[in-house]
Image (tube, rainbow, N blue to C red; front, side, top):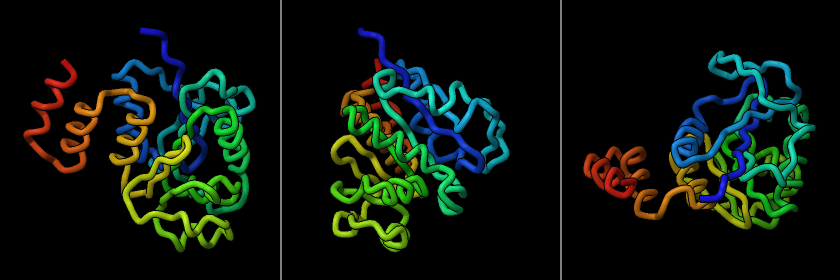
Length: 201
C-alpha cells in the first residue's frame, strides 16, 4: 500500500479537544500519521486544559503534503478574527483539491471565508451561521454531518458522525467497517462490535 500523506489537525488556544478524538484515533489505526498545526510553533492550550506543542506552524503547511486538514471548534472562533489564517489555509486546501473537515465553531470561520456559500453544509444551528452574514443559508442541512465538494461539516454534538464522514472521504475503511464503527460508537449497538472486528480482520 502506498504511504498515506499525514492528516493535519489544527490546534489553537481554547480548541475543543473532545471534538476530533474519534476521527484522529481511528485514522491513526487506519495507517495515517496525525500532525498538529498551530498558529506558530508555540504551545497552545485546549478548552480542556491540555497543553499541545504543535508539530508545525501554519505558515509551513502545504496542501500537497497533506491528506486532510481538520479544523476544530474553539471559543476563539467567536471572539474576533485571530483564526482567519486557518480558514484561508482551508481555502488553499480546497482550491488544491485536498479535503477539509470542520466542526462546531470552525464552520462559522468557513462561512466568513465564503467557503459554505456554494456547498451543502451543517453546523450547530442555521442561526449560528446566519450571524456571520454569509450567503449560503439555503445550502444549510439539518443533519448530523455533511460532505460536499471535498468539505466535511458537523455540529458540536456530532463528533462520531464527523469522524464517519472523514473515514468515507479518505476511504480509510471500507463501508462495512465504517457502518459497524458508527453503530458501535454512535448508537451503542453491541452487535456492531463483532461486525467491526470481522470487517477489520
